[in-house]
Image (cartoon, rainbow, N blue to C red):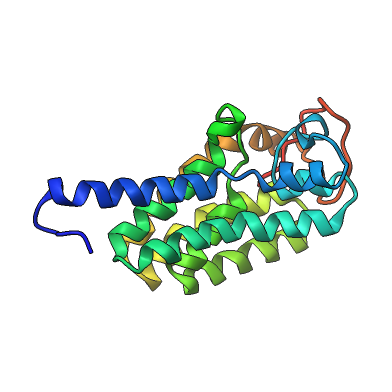
Length: 214
């Protein structure tokens, strides 16, 4: 356990938590799974994204589901492992996992859009908030059939859920992740405003500008 009195004593622990979270978060499961399955580089199809929505465009629903679970799982794992050493340590590791997914060093800092990892972080850090966030995504995705709209709605709602259900600290972490989700979805937002955002499950050709929210 880190000594809460001295930052000099605490710093190595927080650094270790950040490193653990970042390394876990930076594992590009979508890319690994599609390559191992003989589908080539997922970055060369659809939106070029490494997340589950773009994996779905290969026609492999099983790989998309596994990518979703693993991308979420790495966020949850970072939160749960570091959470054994207190909330602050957990938040450092969890947020670092989210950053790792968005900016993996192995892919020249060009990662996914963070939605699955965001949900995993919430489930690991504050599972009631995570469940509400997942439910929000599922309801909007089922009704509207637009993954990015579901992701953006979830990103708006999650800090509110966290504020009222858990604590302001978790809400602040969720808000920071939500800002990054919106930034990563700027192209999706533009297409939503034009009414051009594709529906879930629709295959897109490479270079068409269709972005996935994962």
